[in-house]
Amino acid sequence: MERSRLTDIMHERVVIPGGSPIRVKWNDFPHFTFPWHFHSEYEIVYIMRSKGTRFVADNMEPFEEGDLVLVGSQTPHYWKNDEHLSEGNTNQHVNAIVVQFRSDFMEQAFANYPEFGLIKKLLEKSKSGVHFDKRFAVDIESKLKNLYEEKGFNRFMLLLQILHEMAGTKKCRQLGTGSSEVIPSDVNDDRLKKIINFINLNYTEKITLEQIAGMSGMNPASFTRYFKGKTGKTLVQYINDMRIDYACKLLQNTDYSISRICFETGFNNLSNFNRFFKERMRMTPRDYLRQFLK
Image (cartoon, rainbow, N blue to C red; front, side, top):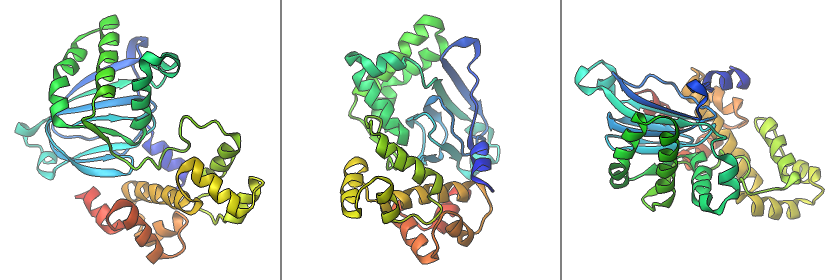
C-alpha cells in the first residue's frame, strides 16, 4: 500500500454543520467502530461507559469509564473495545461525549494574547495526546454534558472555560513521546524546516549524516550539535522514530508481514527493526500487532 493511499484511508474529514467551529456528539452505540484515523479538528473524548484499548499517536494503553483525553489536530487515534463489547452486549453500550473543534478555533487569540497562554501550551501538547486523571474528569463531567446541551454563544464560551480548566490542571500527562511532531511550534528556523521536510519525504530511504550535514552547509560534528539542540534528538534517533511511527501505521492498516514492514519503513535488517521497535514501543512488533487485533 502506498504511503499516500494509507494517508487517504486514515484521514477523516469532519463536517461541522451550520458554520460553527464546534461539534459535540453524545455517542451511544454497541461498540466503537471508527478505525485508526486522524482529522484536522482537535477532539475531546470523555468515556462515561465502555472499556478497551486506546491508541493515540504512538501510545497504546487501556481505557475505562472516566477516561478523558484531548487529541491534537492531525494526531492519529483509535478507541478499540474489549472483545465482549464488540459482540453486541446491549447492556454494555458505549456512552461517550466527543467534542470536536476546528484547528483555527480562536487561533489568533491563542497565539497572541497572554490570557490564553496556558491553552496554547495545552494544544501544543495535544499533538501527542493529553490524558486527564479520573478525579479531574469527574469534576469536569457536568460541563461536558452542558456543552452538549448548549448552543451558539453559550457553547462557545463554555468550551473556552473547559479548555482553560484543562490547561490549568496538573492532573494530566502526555500520552505519546511527541516524536510525531515534525518541528516544535516555537521554532522559526528555515534551515531546520528544509532539513525536516527532506527527511519527511525520504526517511524510508538511506539517509546519511554527511548528506544532511552537507545540505545545511555544516560539517557532521557541527550539524550533530545543531540538530540535537533544535530537536532534542540525534539524526539517527529522529529518522528511526519516524520509521517506527510508520511501521505502527502499517501494522494497524495493512496485512503486510513484519519482515515486509521492516523493509518498507527503511530498516534493512530485521533484528535492528525489532530492537528499535521494542525500545520505542516497549514491546515487539508481533506483540504490538497482537494487542491491536485482539
